[in-house]
Amino acid sequence: MVEIKFRQEHSGDEYQMTHPKAARVLKDIEAWAQGNSFSSVTFWQDEQDPHKLWVQLGDDRLNYWIHDSTFTEGKHETVEMQMDYARGAQRRSAAGYEKFDK
Image (cartoon, rainbow, N blue to C red; front, side):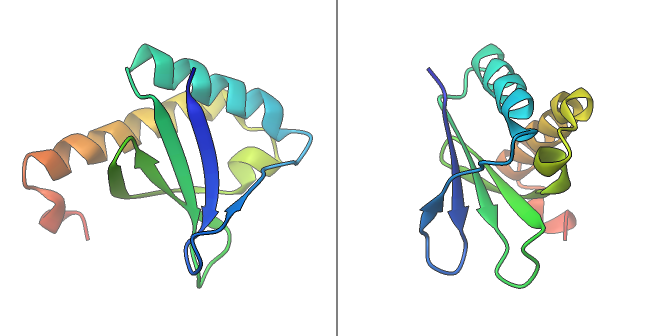
């Protein structure tokens, strides 16, 4: 089972994504994470722009964010692509290329 969390960046507090349209998106993220061998996915709400949710795959917090409208507008058809981009950011970081992603 994949653990999906939402946290506030400034405090680290966890919160729930309760928007009714988010359920389908969360199921798609869970399926994506299972298929890509991630046991946890965390979304960190940016302190200065609360619409930015920074992605963390497993222990790797990435220089990649997803707009909260993905969840609030139920954009399930694009979330797999966005998670693939996040995984790409993770691979660039592991290879030492994160300094070029700023």
